[in-house]
Length: 157
Image (tube, rainbow, N blue to C red; front, side, top):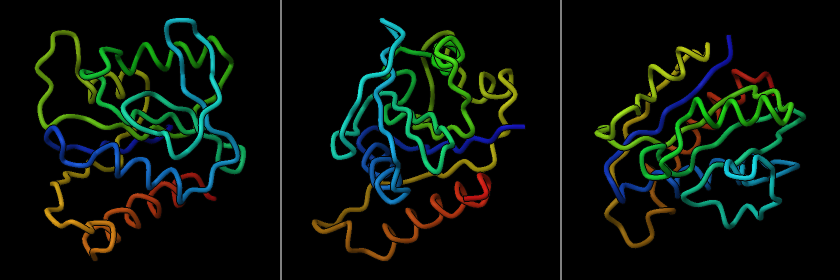
């Protein structure tokens, strides 16, 4: 069974900033935006990862990344996975940002991942780090390292 991690938090808690830093530190060979309207990949720079859907390749394994929550993007996880299947991309892992609660109809991240046969191996609840130089805090470093280590361990990379 393939694996997924959910990064959960309130609006402006730092979910996409966390995901961008995780992606940077995974040192991907390829970074793409998943254009679900046109069903194609568009090359992207790692520094620009923000509220969108990305595919990154790390040691020849594809990671689907929701840097914005599905409800914000108005794109379900199921639909993004189907687009990847159409593009013949074999997703090895999913990293998804999720608001603290999903209130939009037809959005249920947990159920969608289970229905697509992804095991949710961790749900990490994050809160905004209220410091100007938050990226220099121990809390930030521990958060990023925990996510990276979990991904690497589960992908055997």
